[in-house]
Length: 357
Image (cartoon, rainbow, N blue to C red):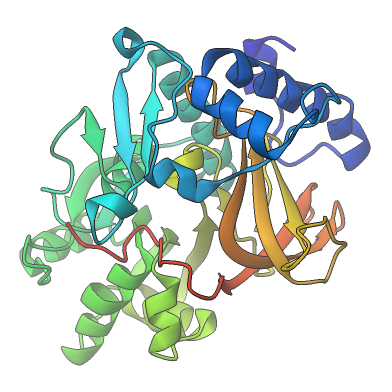
């Protein structure tokens, strides 16, 4: 399958049988590519997974390795961007190397996914953050990457917060006056939306009643769980902050990571996270790491057909989740659907907004 065919695949309409006609082979092709172009990856595979490559397998590497090694399958001259994840110290930050080809691939796929939820038109966009997050265009933080990646789906980008994380009420009021009767797009990281936007509006007894809004959010769930805030409570408070009783508001969490930027797993109307066609989820036993079936909780492995500039195509995360089914979600979208229940014990918090910068 050539690059154009890969990027033009339908997001949620192919069945498991149709997907398997190409997916495993494409993933294995990436394994061979990185094995040949990244000495560190080759060493990891040879040490931990002897003979697996020759047996046409695509073994997963621990996502934590990106915090300790700069893994790349391109030359230094081809590096266009280095993305970084959140972390409390420099040793806890993943560094992901991208070339122009990977940037284009990620953006095209992200566009296809997000259009499924927002439509094709660029919408007035309210960003629950401050505008200084995007600074160095060569090296973006996880928050910067998220904002930059999703900003192409919006227009009249309005930042709802000041740099000290206080509400920018003047900007929010102006946005409301202009677009209260239009469909709008709201984006932010989960914990920041809760702490600095929704609950602050609630304290001030303020609400902005837009007639039609779609909200995408991700990251920081660990902090909300610590505060005993459920997904439904988050949705209720946020919906009351920006939608009238007769208005429409769609609130969709998504699961993603800087180590596989571009392919996000968006929560459907039934509360299930969905794999797009370019991704696959494998749940592994907490002790043996063997693959396990549906409706059994285990460690999440995420596979992606996009990364060519770094070996991030098959990653064992530190997240715990459950595959609920495949091709039969009542929302009508094909592919695997799943939930994320938390982090492995003793694993560091990796949510995109857990560290503010």
